[in-house]
Length: 142
Image (tube, rainbow, N blue to C red; front, side):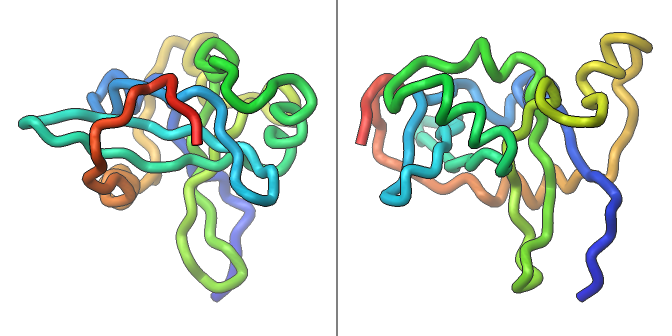
């Protein structure tokens, strides 16, 4: 599979506004200390969630700034979910903030130019990442 340099992303804000998620967990990390948050949505009495790991650059900033269990929603204000393809050809979704990037984010450009433009971001595929979960307090850590 050939990889392209095209950046396919959508803002976390637009996903929230569309009801894709209703809550964000506190900062979590896996056994390798790689940071992530869990996006949570409740509908029709069921709770769905998906873990969103940070892209490499953003993960470095998160690990250098926050501790496991910290509330980081305000840090994610202008974050994007970037749709990527790994070396195995699998689609993955990563959280990214452009504050530490060489490029402007879609959120920055939307705010600057006032446009929520269409994108190639696969919203349906991203929503399939959510799985039914037991109800867990948003602030709980594991």
